[in-house]
Image (cartoon, rainbow, N blue to C red; front, side):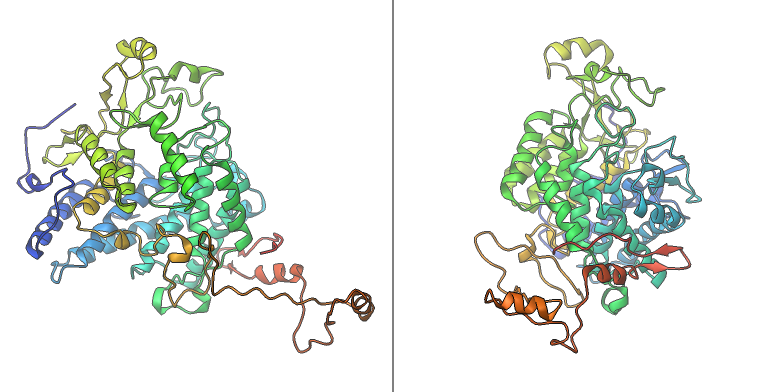
Length: 549
């Protein structure tokens, strides 16, 4: 573990201690200013001044990652939310808020350039039409072809939609024009069929065998389900919008994603029985299920099988960054994953997800446990700022010992994120900021989650600007404001007379005039106009049938 002897005076106050609580206004300002300095030095410093995107590692000068960019924007936005308590922040909150907006708009602009891909993907959910997840850090252009990189990662688009709604709900203006509204509506169509679209998932590799084959991932479906719930009825122009800036979601598509997701749990996929990727899905930021049994059984399985002394393993037989992995080969040979059993790398990133989960679910023992584990792996950079290694690996000379007795060998920290002048792993640093703001009391969970994803749908507040919302009934109760009315219409007088012989009263379309009766096929044609934009060559909702809901 690398430690720097050089310390920055302001960072002496950062303490990985859950008992640290803000007690006064002056203390609040002082603590926020410390985190502002941290965010400036560890995140904003590496934001592209042109695209607003972030790289995966701080020394990367060419490739920006959409997933890491979204989490960095979320961390910056969370500090912006915390600063709103301050009367005079000397311009800090505005800078933070606009930096988050710049990132979210940067992602939007990169994807808008690929609008043709969305149109093709709506017709054929193939990886060759997927939106890219890596772009040039400066120009925003594509950097990897579909043959060079696995771009089909539905969870990334869903994550973007989720944080877009969270940020807009906090009062930020991210979407500017009707063209952008139409594009976001088409992003909804892009993720709607996650339940039947094999993708490469959060780890970008598809099946655990890393042979370039995608598969159905519960984490991708869950993230899509949460995004659809969040954005349904959301006015992208915020309080200043009208009906034409509202996003609509097919409730049947949402329900299919929900049912498949909850059927898959606690598994992640066909090849991965347990995967730590489900932690951000069942907890912050997605909160994709509020079924207590499913959530607890999934989390318990992950902790039991994947938790280590330096972090969480991603999944069993994961060879990424192991010393035995050949970095020059993109794919593995048949049966090669057996070589990585019990020597998988451990990732401290998920300690921070577990801390945040503990705060949201009021589990102080869990928060303390993972704070203590995290404090053991924290390093210092040249400024004296805390930084977290990207991963911990089993050194080559210890591989056989670790295989024979799992957990017996000390893992080495990666150079990335290990302090000194080594590059930072920005996803780690972003999650560290969010976790610290929550545990020190500088940020409330309602400020981090304004749309209350952490609550069951029937407990979430209804905003007047929302035109639609999905609502599940409380366990053991009913949705009191839900009334279902059924009217039987006979298409002809002959059918009406036939049903009358069985005591069933019906009306014909002629009798209910001026009310018009339309078939579901005509509704499909009407929905085709949602998201149409000639400038972007977007044709709106594809000709998918409308379900029973």
